[in-house]
Image 1 (cartoon, one colour):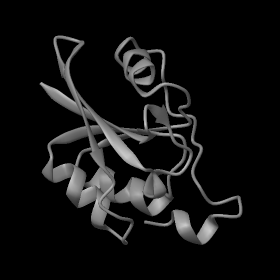
Image 2 (cartoon, rainbow, N blue to C red):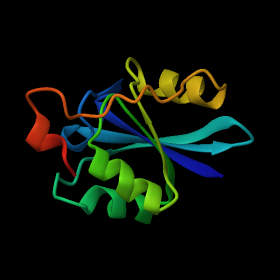
Image 3 (cartoon, rainbow, N blue to C red):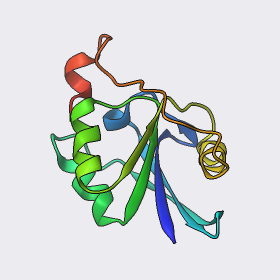
Length: 119
């Protein structure tokens, strides 16, 4: 079983990982979603969310955009980061499971949230 966390605004993938409203957590067994839950984002503080999500057993993060520092922290914990996603969170997870969703390299650093996106 693996857990995938989608940075979301309700059921939709959000553009800014650290400032998402909630995380949709999907449990995967044999390539299929077996369970899902929604947890409120506990807050954006430097280095906190990688430790928090790792503590929940998350192995994959899906988001629209995320800071490069956060990607490094997730990778250090063996957590795969997929960025550039959009649309419905469950659909994004299913696309990932079928090999259709690949990371686009959409790291937050070239727009007006530059300082906010650094984890």
